[in-house]
Length: 107
Image (cartoon, rainbow, N blue to C red):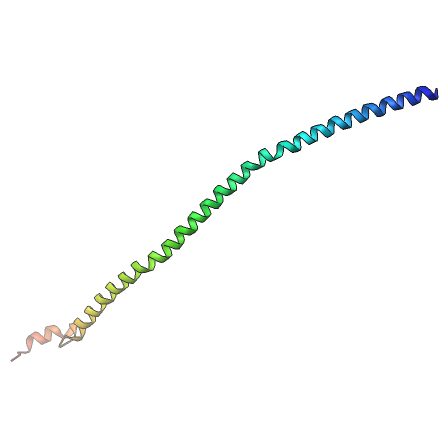
């Protein structure tokens, strides 16, 4: 009986060995297929990086161009304010007193 049990054990070990080798080959093939699927996230990441760089460039350009227009508008509003101040300073009487100034005869 010892020989029969030993034969059964060898047969079981052989089947186990075949199963382990088949599993190992399947795992090796699966590992070789992984790099093909990894390249897609890289392309998505590169697209995201490209969009981020584009947005950063637009922000930098806007920050350089924006203050120029603001300075031109500020200069124009300063000129308008100075004209208003000049008009107020050059009056002979305050606005509220102008009707009384019409009553005074100027020579």
